[in-house]
Image: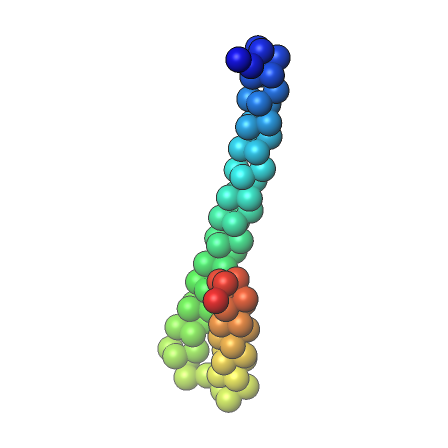
Length: 79
């Protein structure tokens, strides 16, 4: 039967593992929120462009942003 010291050490190990997992979840959520904010900004840009008609250069800028977003999302999600 394990001693109290051994059990305490196991609990400490478990706490360390839990802390690491919690930090990874926090980091992933922060990354997800940043991606969502970027998507929201692009949507706002698209709405403004549609309302204003936009120039060819402005439309290309939006296309470039969408291409970058798509690449970012594809790199974030494992195949």
